[in-house]
Image (tube, rainbow, N blue to C red):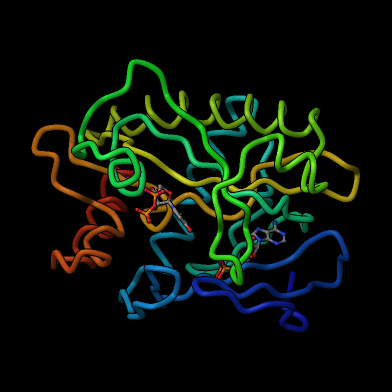
Length: 235
Ligand code: ADP
Ligand code: UDP
């Protein structure tokens, strides 16, 4: 399958049409942004890590009964996926306090939760992705109750599969962001990516950060952290 016209260029990926109207090619860049696009940079090799890791996790999820957009890895940076209509919600699951949760509720980072939490943000750059609850999403026609229920169940299932997998490679899955989309035949599938850009990963023994927080917070060794996650995921 070959790339045809570029349909979209985002902050981290480009999306291309193909000769099949139901398939697109996503191409992962090394560009990194944080704080609503205010901080910009390059993480050398990130596109390769995110592409390959995301595909590995999506295949693991498929094996565990979670439908995803993944079709075929085409190269180090390019993957063929089902074209979906993205549900404009960022779905965030948390197992341990960190980031905006710690800030919003005035607690330290690193508190493990007895049960995972879920929250939604409205995926809208002009509005800076405001927090949104399920009632707001239904009121605005962003999703139906049935779709919200499906998304919630899929998100928690994804969390259990991922938590177990990452623990087996010595990594705590702190929190992560998911995006879902609707295929041409109306099925809700996991879309976008699962990578150190979209998850917080802490080393299980030392709590060392192995994700984009190294870039956000200028902690150094950013490329090393991505490479280390790649090494662990592919053993
Ligand atoms: P952003 O748009 O936030 O800058 P990216 O640079 O990652 O993010 O761009 C990728 C875009 O492609 C995102 O808007 C994402 O929602 C969208 N997308 C992800 N998977 C699919 C898919 N299977 N079909 C269509 N669009 C997708
Ligand atoms: N996240 C993401 N994209 C976003 C916002 C958050 O991938 O636009 C991920 C982030 O990497 C983290 C989780 O979602 O793993 C929770 O992020 P949080 O709400 O704590 O926000 P942040 O601290 O990134 O502002």
